[in-house]
Amino acid sequence: MRIEISNIETIHDAARGFIDSVLHQPKAPHVIAFYGKMGAGKTTFIKALCECLGVEDVITSPTFAIVNEYQAKGNPTQIFHFDFYRIHRIEEVYDMGYEDYFYAPHALCLIEWPELIEDILPDDALRVSISELSDGRRTLDW
Image (tube, rainbow, N blue to C red; front, side, top):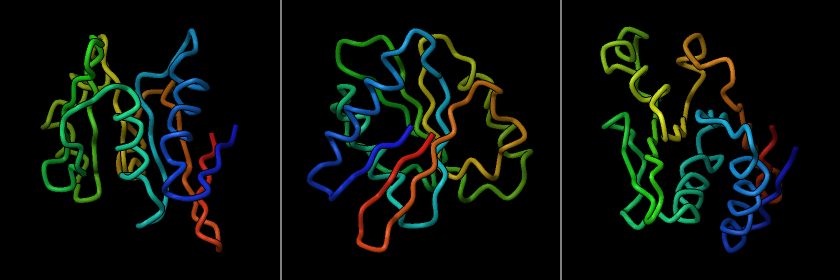
């Protein structure tokens, strides 16, 4: 499937479309891996996605913390936002106890830079590619 983001003003519409197409399905994924070049819009889209899911906390990239945890208002689902850009060795991910996040009940894991942990992503993880077009539009493909 594909969703297009025309500009920053339409990002919440795209996030709601993604929620309807992916997260409101009977077998919704619990781990979503976002692939894209630096500056493609991974963090910006995840922020919009979290806001549309009801997160009221400040949503920032976990570049240095590796993972941020959010709670959506009125929703038992915990949202874990990962950024593995600064991971140097897969052992760092083992040491942080990634299984506790990836396989937690009532959890949604949103991952930036999953290329660095590809070997440990769950088989049923949804892989989403974010691309920037020459005119500034973004596309999400899965």
